[in-house]
Image (cartoon, rainbow, N blue to C red):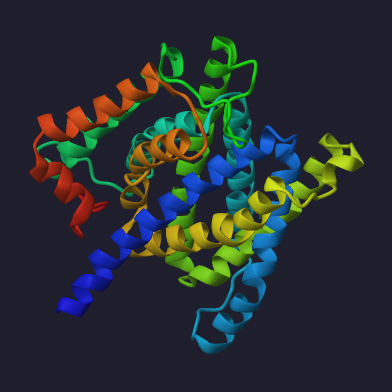
Length: 338
């Protein structure tokens, strides 16, 4: 019993926390690389290509050693949709980070649980029992997360902790970020979270049909690579932009290929299969603290009042609405299943 409980609850919790830490690190590395001139089209294509190559041998090993249902052609359009959603979401995400900061990207990720819960209700993956405490907690969390995201997008606010210009990997451009760029970046990041929420929903449906995490993620990454290749090569026509240099840009691309898309996608897919889409999405707010701390302490990022208010709203929701509903929502196996 203890081992099964650890597998169904403790292990997914630890895996999701690790995945969020990995994603925050990736966002910060990309921001630093973009200030060095790395195009986000180049970054996205290389990321998908390397991730596909990383999972290629694992997919064949897993497919050959595990009894799986026969792959049906009806799954192809769903996996193609996964690739389209993932590619579109990554473009919006990294362009939004380029316009703003990795800290804003993590703050906007508060929208992911709200979008995922709404989509899960629409597609009848969640039962909307209004008298159920867990459902009430999810609805309240949806409202609060949307409110926090609106605050951080439309109110940048004054600088609480200024950037360290002496830091070689400072995430703030010398000219700073204008209010218009901040809003555009926030809207792009919000769009990316909506696309990723749709990805969670579709991936959950795929896993019900074909329960093989590594094989499905490999096929998703392969489709994303095929979709992104012509788009990125046409839009980024400067051949010199595709030349990799031995600096922070190369580190970011290699990190994204091994730990970004491949590792995070496998973890998310496994947890989607085990716990459902709402469970996976509610770990996004954890990235706010991680991104703010890493950006300010290690990379000289500036901390704005708007980001701090969004973080305060989230923790106020935890305190005001009681730890029982929220912690149960995060920790217990009934999460994602009203």
